[in-house]
Image: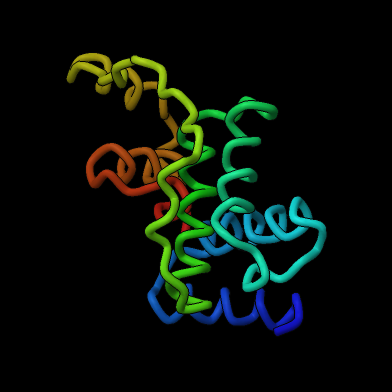
Length: 144
């Protein structure tokens, strides 16, 4: 399977499972980075040590956030499990990026009212902000 057919198969599997376009773009990017990191070898030729080396290098050398490393891990798990139909139980030895201990910021009802009151036009921006607040949609979902 050539690189372009690997990417086509990855995109097809993601679309078949109704993944978002942003997830598709991210997963394709991670698979391409992994292939480049591995000397342009096909993922079928690579083993657990190659995947572990790539993911560990993200954490140790590139110092990516935990969520970034987890996204790369998810992309590779999806590639091996759902596209290449290969087992992935060997992903235990990788060095995980540490998650910072922080709590999400949640606005009070009064703060939300003040934010919404600043949107005076009543147009598209007000509609999008209202949708985001009231439904929990993601930004791109609301914009579509």
